Image (cartoon, rainbow, N blue to C red):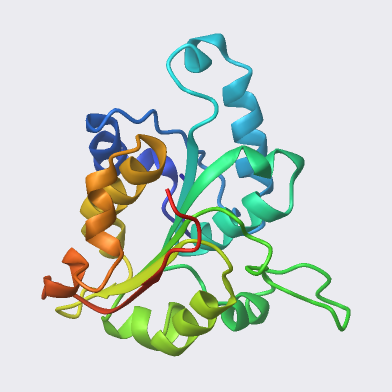
Length: 222
């Protein structure tokens, strides 16, 4: 799990406990700068070299998610580092959109014409994009227009939706966990029933009025 700005993973206790209650070993760090994925990559290497951790996990079934700045970090951890191929599922929550990332000087090659915050067209693992409809999320961090651009750039199994009821940026860390678990269980635990939550004309989430702006595409057939 990649933390957002000002919220180290040591403050994610409730989130970590939720994932752990579904059988997931959850690992994060407390670095304040995580947009580039560097510390996340190092954390993964550290974890996979600890026998007490590897003895509890299936190293072929590792997911990565992040909130806010950590959403950027999750994208970049997958793309920018040699161990990025170890991730099998991706779930950025209210990720900082590309233009905002560049404006904040969170990006690569910033002094060149090919500057970028993160790349999505090279991501090949199932990706869930989630954000809120509150003012800060919808106007600044993850506006719908930017979410649609990100969704369109992805060339893999993908889903996007926003939490209704004006749920805003900070609270999104806690508001989307049910569908996140369903996403992880589908791809990592082969819970085939969960396909109905996201894909097909009668996807369950379409009838859930707590969410809106839903779309999905399944490229690989499980």
